[in-house]
Amino acid sequence: MRGRIKSRGCPIPLLLLLILLVGMMVHSSLAKDQDQVDLSAYQWKSRLLVLFSLSEDDPVYQSFKEQLQGRTQEVHDRDLLTFHVFETGESRTAHLQLNEGQVLFLRKKFSIMPGQREVILIGKDGGVKFRGELPAGFSDIFPIIDAMPMRQREMRERSK
Image (cartoon, rainbow, N blue to C red; front, side, top):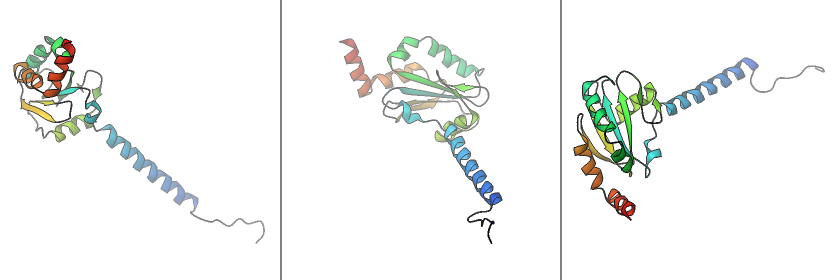
């Protein structure tokens, strides 16, 4: 049997199939990661205000958005980052556009049903501090933030 090479291991077609399957598993895993929103990345840095609405054109959302735009300094002072999550249209934060998977992830995480308008306040510690139906206003939200021990300390430190 000189001159013949014996094949050890997998035949070429089976090896290609295995490579293809592993590639698909890795892609699937990465796609799932892209469809999640890592809220813990904001922990100890920002308070989060997650707004769920039908669309950007929804009058209830528009009313809240106008309040938000009129209080930019107060929002900034409280280290508040806003997520705008819509059933239809482009969902986003100030720095990031959310894909459809991320929107579904957030809706599932906070048990938001279709047609539901909701505002959720998450503290710097990652805990939900307030949950209410839009159009809950800043007169509801700011006092909750300002009563938080961490916020009290921030106000003392900034006044020095």
